[in-house]
Image 1 (spheres, rainbow, N blue to C red):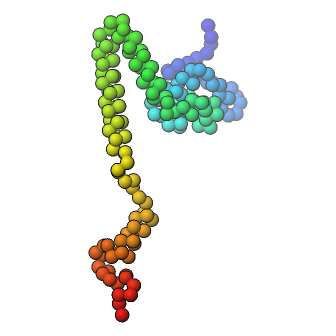
Image 2 (cartoon, helix red, strand yellow):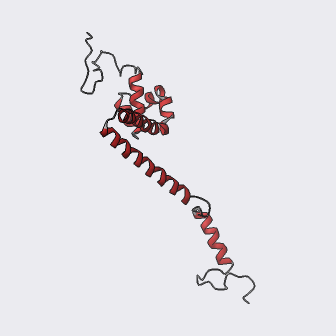
Length: 161
C-alpha cells in the first residue's frame, strides 16, 4: 500500500518539502477530465485553477486544448448524459425511461426557442445604430426640415433676409 494521504475530496495531500514555492504541477488525465467537466458547468478559469490546485497561467499552459474547446464541453456533457440514460432505459429501467422523456422534452423546447430566436433575428429587423450614426440621422432630418424641433426655417439657407 502507498503511504500517500488524500484529503476529503480525494486529492493527494501535499506536505511541505522544505523547498520554497509550490511544487511543479503535474497534469494527469484525472485533472484533464475535471477541467472539461467544470468548463461544461460554466466555471471561470479562476475557479477551475483553484479546483485543481494551480494558478491560472499554469492552467492555460497545461490545459490549453481543453480550454480551447470550452464552448463544446457543455454539448459533450449533455451527449454523455443522454448516452448513460439511454443505456439504462434500454435495459427496462422505468425511472431512466421517464428521465429520458424529460430530457428529450427539454431538448425539444430548447431547439424550438433557438428557432424562434433565429427567426426574430432574420432580415427585416433593423440593427441598433450607434450614437454617432443617430446624431448624423438627426442632423439630416433637422437640415431637411423633417423634424418639428422649434427651429423652423432658421437652418435653411437663403430663406431669410
